Amino acid sequence: MRCQGKGRKTRCTPLRKDTVAALQAWQGEQQGRSKAPVFPNARGQALSRDGVAYLLAKYVAIACQYCPSLQHKRVTPHVLRHSAAMELLQSGVDCAVIALWLGHESMDTTQIYLHASLELKERALVKTIPINGRLGRYAPDDDLMAFLKGL
Image (cartoon, rainbow, N blue to C red; front, top):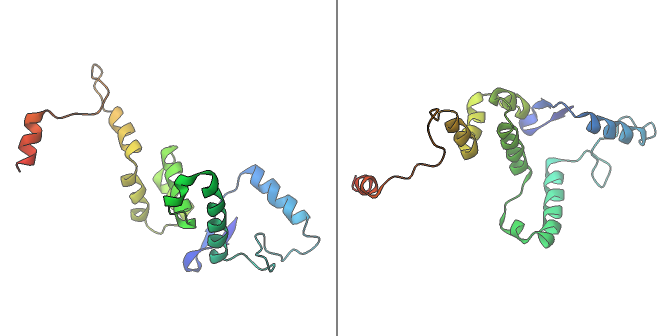
């Protein structure tokens, strides 16, 4: 699927087969209106970025009734984009592929996700444990902590 994103950049995103089937069913319901937007707003025009943000806020407010902890969370389309990128990263998808998926022009932008993932760092550390070593987090003794605090 191709769509125009922030900065009028065209982004190309592969779709899952079930998503393609749902979109084809939707097109079948359009009764010859091939120019109709896939995601229309209430007036039948193309859904804008602001429209997406409005709908998300509306449904987050409803979700807060069932999950009160959401009231203290900032949920925006951009947060969902970052969440998807982190999920891809934690699933083992290469950072270069994530950069292409997100439409980043530079790998440096995508490197932020590597720094943000403590779980990914811990998985990397597990791979460096000696054969007879033990798993677990390092806990410095009191002498070392006193030395470090004195620096």
